[in-house]
Amino acid sequence: MSERPLHEGKLDRAQTLSNVRSEATYEAISVNPVTPVIGVEVEGVDMTSDVPDAQIEELNQALANHNVLFFRDQPELTAEQQIAFAKRFGGLHIHPAAPQGEKYPELFVIHTHGESFVNNGADWHTDVSCDEEPPLGTMLQIHRTPPSGGDTLFANMYAAYDALSEKMKTFLSERTAIHDSERAFRGRYADKGVDDTGAVFPRNEHPVVRTHPVSGRQALYVNETFTSRIRGMAEDESNALLEFLFRHVSRPEFQVRFNWQPNSIAFWDNRCTQHLAMWDYWPNERYGHRVTVKGDRPFYKAN
Ligand code: SIN
Image: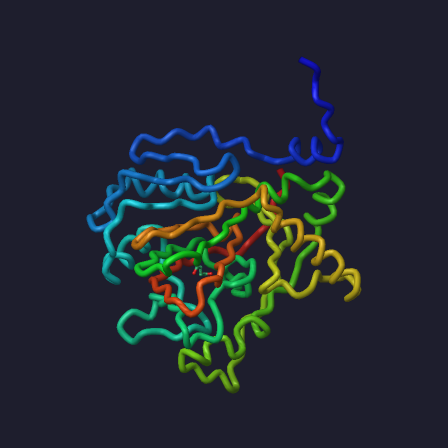
C-alpha cells in the first residue's frame, strides 16, 4: 500500500495537539475519557452522601488533569446537597453581578426561556476571570433540558498553550492582561430583575499564561468575554494579538461538546478551561443550578 502524503500544515497541527493524558490512575473513582484531549465521564460518586475524602482527593486530581468532569448518574440534587458537595473543594464564590437568592446566595440559577433577553455564558470565557481571585471551578447541574440543543462546549487551555510556537510561548509568558467585567455584566441580568445603576464591576490584571497550581502545567488565560487589553502594548497591537488568541483558543480540536440530559452535571476547572453555552433552543426552556468554588490569584512560574 502506498503512503498517503500528508499536507504539511495538517501534520503540524496534529503534531502540536497535546492529547497525551496524564499518567494518573484512579482507585476511588472510575474515569472514562470523552475525547483524547479534554473531558472525562466520572462514575462511582454519590453526591447525595458524605463523599469519602479519597474520592474528593482523586476528583481534585482528575479536574486538574482532564479539565472537565461529567457525571451522568446523579439524581436531581437539592440546593443543600449541591452546596455541601461543592464545599468539599473549597469555600464558595458569590457571583459579583448575577441575582442571588436570599437563602442560598452561593447558588446561581441558570434559567433561559422564551422571555429571556440573554443566555448566560454565550461567548467563550472562564468564569469571572475579572475577579482578583477568580473561581477555581464551577459545578453545574441542569435539571430541565430543552427538547434538543443547549449543549455546552469546553476547551482545553493547556492544549491551546502547548500548540503555540516556542517563540510565542516565551513572548506571552512575559505578558499580563486586563480582565474587565463592565462590558460583560452591565445590563446582563436586567431580565432577571437586577438594576445595576451605579454598580462598579470587577477589573483585574492577570498573567496571559497561567501555571496550574495542582498540575504545574501552563495554560492560556485570556478569554473574549473579559480580557480587554494586553498590558504594555499599543491598543491596535493588543487588539490584533487578542484577536489571534481568541481564534486560537476556540479551535475545535481543543474542545468537547457536552449534550445535557436531565440531571447531568459538569464540573469544570476554570484555571485551565474555557466554556461556551449554546443558545440554539429559544424559545424553549433550560434550567439548572450552578455553584462555584473560590480560587487563588493566578500566577506564572516558568518550568
Ligand atoms: C456558564 O457559563 O456558567 C453557563 C454554562 C451553561 O449554562 O452551560
